[in-house]
Length: 230
Length: 230
DNA sequence: CATTGGCTTACATCTGCCTTACATTCTTTC
DNA sequence: GAAAGAATGTAAGGCAGATGTAAGCCAATG
Image (cartoon, rainbow over all chains, first blue to last red; front, side, top):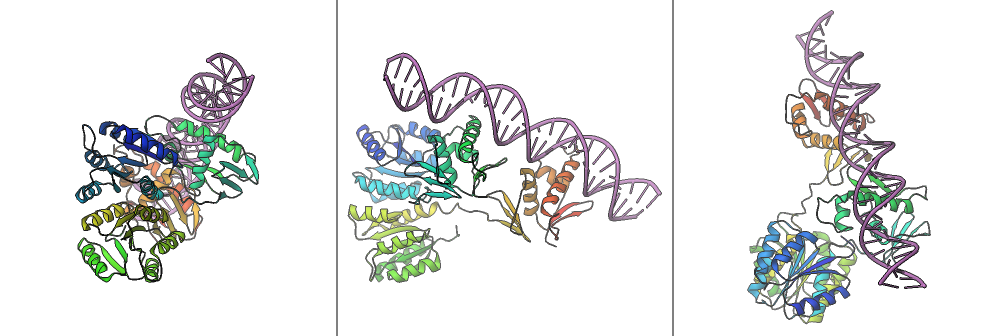
């Protein structure tokens, strides 16, 4: 759901890890890495990535055990196993443990990219190539610009991200939790991030709603916010 | 989502098709088959299967064209390509066209099963309870919204909780004790919070019944309240 | 007609949201 | 690389709507 998907790589081979990072960052993903099972397990909980690239031969703990534990905890993320254990039995075991896809080393990078895209495709909001429109508000995703009533709005990065997320969920109520997770990429639920959201919503409102008679961004008390044409 | 997932196989090789059907039926799936692209395309629209097993070498029309057309139509189903075209380029093209997975022939049946399970795994927990309906009153649990006669009702959090509880017990008499316990989470039974309930019931009535001729929320003197269509 | 339970109104409190001002971090520019 | 400026985050206070409380009134039941 977030505009830039986050991928965590758990891989102990430094060379391989670096190659993956550079290739995937070029492809537009936000990458984090871990070099051991423990670190990876911790980072999954801390960062809540959208996709996990998992090597199976890890120091200390087996990759499959990590995966099993994550699934037991009910963590909802895509997992692509990327390993040199590549017999049919390995693949079946990996998939049955809870992986969403399995690719053996050596692999072709284009295929890896295509499989990653296939896994993330369903999480991303229907990526319409054209600009998003809500009432007289127009969002151009490519140019990172917003127009209201044909008139350009000067939005900062956060403001644009926030507005984009609301626009992609137009008509639906967006909770603070969703915003914290998908826009701020905040995971620790006990840090009171609530106020930041309030402030940014206010700043966004000042730009997109205050100068205009019709208000698009509504507050739903106790639940969150909603962007809709009235 | 359905208890027994439905799989459609588009495959022109009769032998292969029959082998797949018998193996997958043994695994507990409901199988339909098509032997040409046109038939398959038609059956996808008619049967709305959960998963499509797609061969690429089909008479008359190319399997990828079928897939492209389905994706253009916005059809949401999982697609696993199963074909003898098995170069890296083929796989990348298939995945980028919109397939969720790609398996080359010859393949191992256990691996096919594991990949099918992995694809269907994510659909199962999507058991959304669907909106509750009592007469012309509709409760959407997900969006926390209520409609009466198609017209949205502006309910507060408590009002919604209360209405939801009554709706879940529609037709049954709900006592004050039940409400105190289940809606207000009140434990000490001696604190007389009866009045709170009365007041909130009155407020709820004002919104869901007062503007309409047919009254859904009735008082049963000495026992409690009851939500039912008259 | 008295009693009981339920309804209504008015008011008190409490929570959640908004605002403002200020601090910190990140960028830009010379 | 230091200073200036913009962007973002933090903290505190105020306001309004939501919820709870109390008291009086009304309607049903015997």
